[in-house]
Image 1 (cartoon, rainbow, N blue to C red):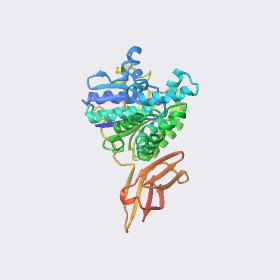
Image 2 (cartoon, rainbow, N blue to C red; image 1 turned 60 degrees about the vertical axis):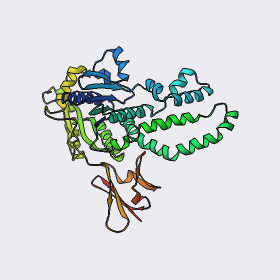
Image 3 (spheres, rainbow, N blue to C red; image 1 turned 45 degrees about the vertical axis):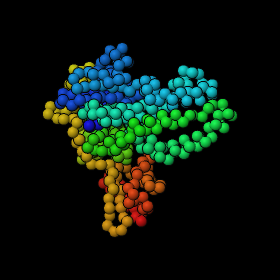
Image 4 (tube, rainbow, N blue to C red; image 1 turned 90 degrees about the horizontal axis):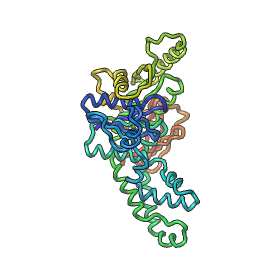
Length: 396
């Protein structure tokens, strides 16, 4: 099964392009699911679904045509399906602080629930072999990074915190419940967390396998949008995912000759030139600006025709180079971790080793890279940033 993540700055048209890609994949005969992971869902709107259909049935896969389903993750339903005991406990705690019932229930939906629910479905459909391709319409860049980092974050929590927390509460619960205004969570609460984690097992390896998962960044030919696209490229690379396509949406077509657009055309051409240089070896794909809003099946098919050649298969990986690799160097106990970090500057990179992990920081973002057993006892000795690649050497 192939997974295609469409991400980018909000307002670039990534939902429309994800939907158009799903249509083209279905036409190629692939069993396709387009899933919205954006809390501000607009996938149903892209297909111009009626309001009653859009707000109801898209919380489960909805068939749009042969081989094509769409799905918007409805967090309210997911709480009832998978998060019941967790949300109930959090709600009871909030109520003791004086927060009203409805407000407490809303606040009990904490950040990450939607992303974890979406990942659970991706993993379920992969194991069931229900679809050939899943197209993920992701939230804007920052939320997308949280989405793809969630499996690693949970894995760290389950290994380092969960056992200790569960055992500690088991020991103190009888006494604490006598004096605390709120009962501590029962052991079934932790069982619920463990069950959720098990449903995600293996998804991190799928996301980081370039043969299985590709990231497509949707952008516009504008300076500010390009800068965010560059940052997104770095962050996805840092998290072990492979970006294989850059889609520049809403480029002014050659037929637009009105003097009003002269400045826009010059600006776009300048930014497009920068993108050609910055994103090598990826050649950005250009999609023209349409004369009206892209809504409904017919317009999405037109968008697909503008984005892809008639004989092009969007499911194919355009690039499979991993974002980081481990290498054995000459000499005894000498290894290197090599990361692809395009556009990163030396001054914004920090790194250190913690237990069996190499920790790399770019700005406020931190990436934990689990080291193979042969490298866990080694110490980082030197690092260099050359041609967009960070090489960290470790020695015994």
